[in-house]
Structures are given as C-alpha cells and as structure tokens.
Image (cartoon, rainbow, N blue to C red):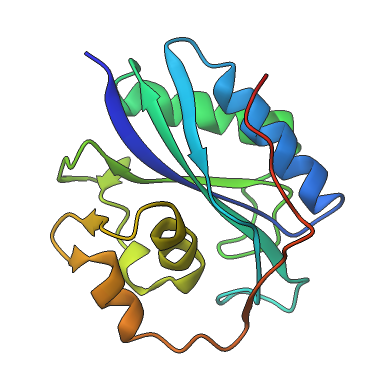
Length: 168
C-alpha cells in the first residue's frame, strides 16, 4: 500500500536553497517514494531557540510505500547526510524535515507523533501546504485554511526566485 504524506522541509545554515533542493532529490530517491508536489519557498523567522538566521521552508506532498517509522528513519538519514546535528532544541539547522501528516493517521507515539504536534500553529507549514492543497485538512485540527485564518503572517514571505524542482 502506498500512502500520501505531507513533509515540511527547512534550512537556515549554509546554502539554504541548495540544501532544500538536495533534500527534495534525496526524498525522491527513497525506495517506493514519489514527490507529487512542491510548494513555493518561504523565508521565515525562527521559532524559539537562540538568535539565528532566517529559514527557507517548503512543503512536499509525497506518496510512499514506506511505513511511517521507516520514513522517519529515512528522513533522519537525509538530515544527517546534510550535516544535521541534534545538539540544541529549536537551534539552527542545516536541514530539518518533519512528517506533518501521514495518510490521515493519528498516533501519540513519542518517537513519531502524527500529525506533527505543532503543525496547527506553524505558519511556515500551513501557508505552503495551503498553496499546494487549498482544501487540505490536518487530522484532529480541521481545515488548513481555517487554521491559517487565526495566525499572524508577520515574519513570513514567499521567495518567488527560490523554486525547488521535482526529482529527475
């Protein structure tokens, strides 16, 4: 069975756009996984943590045959391949990939909570996701458009010149 999943990707260190493009290619290279759509890229202020550079963020819609935990292991390996070190919560990152939603599943597993526990309050997830799928719903929280309506859009801007290509 192949499932649809929503992934959020972000980077705020080094060649941010190059890292995100490499990330998209790596995700498309996972076994039994296809990148169906890629959102526009947004530049966003960091949420929490120490002073750090702004992020570039995007959302990917994928279809995968990987079960959720295997997908999590695979994206952690991709992050590590781009130099991600998990040293400080909400600290700067060469690459951050989150599973936002996986085929509508709900799980409170501490290793992989589904949907992502803070997705409903994160503009840098909801705005690009809405660009891809205006009718999207976040399980347990409702329509993405309604969630967006209650959020302040300050500190987030679309970067039209930053375009991520689908895997070749």
